[in-house]
Amino acid sequence: MAASLKYTLHRYGSQNDLQKLGVWEVEGDKKGKYWVVYIHGGAWRDPRVTHEDFTPSIDQILLSTPPPGLTSVNDDDDGSGGATGGIAGFASIDYRLSPHPQFPQDPATTPADQYRGARHPDHLDDVRSALVFLQRTYGFGGNYVLIGHSAGSSLAFQLLATSSPSASASASASTAPAVTDAAIDSTGHPVLPAAIIGLEGLYDFTGVNDRYDGAYAPFFRGAFGAGLDAWDAAAPIKFAGSYAGKWPGGNIVLLGWSPDDTLVDGPEADNMARRLRDLDGFVEEGEGEGEGAMGSRGSVGDKRLILLKDLRGDHDEIWQSGEDVARTVWIALRKLEAGL
Image 1 (cartoon, rainbow, N blue to C red):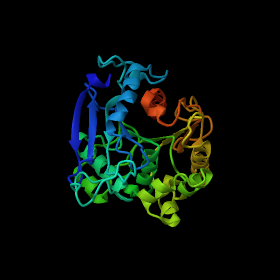
Image 2 (cartoon, rainbow, N blue to C red):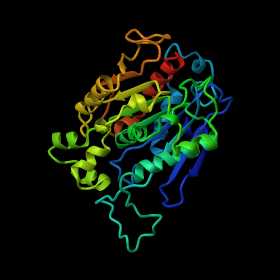
Image 3 (cartoon, helix red, strand yellow):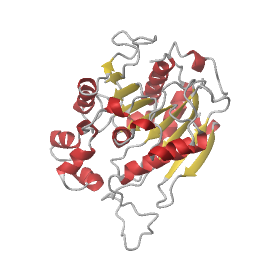
Image 4 (cartoon, one colour):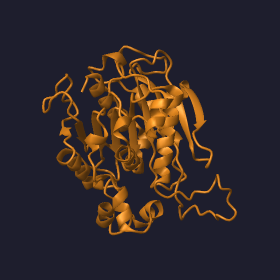
């Protein structure tokens, strides 16, 4: 369980109290293992959603049985109640938030470090800074799986879209070189992850707002401004470049959606998957495909896309339960271990 792991609260910035992150370290040798890093959602503005909401998912990862084929994970138990041999640690990131009408603040009387007045790219800048802090502190370079839920999924793809190609590293935890401060400083960006998991994500801001008859306009305006052009400029699905080109060292994108989700509809995941296939050249495969050096639908070195539309539970129940978060983590780790 998460409570059995060594927990450390870090502050990666000094402007705002929300510039903090939590780390849960797994005991033992970390060589050849991956970190799992989480970005929470909350519509870029909900102060009730925090980095601590990742703990149910950590619990489920520790309690669940890794899938067959992940030998290095199955063979190691750290005494926390589950096998964690493929995982070096967990981290979860808080970031500055935009104003929320249900939790108003007076900027004239609220201390600056408590005020929630973020506007894009503030949220993204914080995620970037948090990852740089983690890589400098724990030295894992690109050996991590980055998970985003809802708005956190948007931030994961925004990170990729705004990165430098030189920020990408090898996706093999056993062979990737350690990342130095100089390497990070030369790009101004963190080293990109080996895999990205987007759960119940928001990718097409104007599209989803239209499908919900304008219901999402208030929080998109709060995060990105009033202009629809600004929404499109920040929307992952509207990225004008190539995700594959931005991410030469990355291998896997996993998109997950639940048919029980009452806040984000299926076309968000479908359309983002289509964009990754048709524009970026990702090869789609099923959950259990491609466990060797060559997948059944592609060649060695292909960018892999997995679209799961069978998650269970409503929008926030995904992270409140943690079961499907754990499932997707094990899928990504299995495919990374298989050398995809």
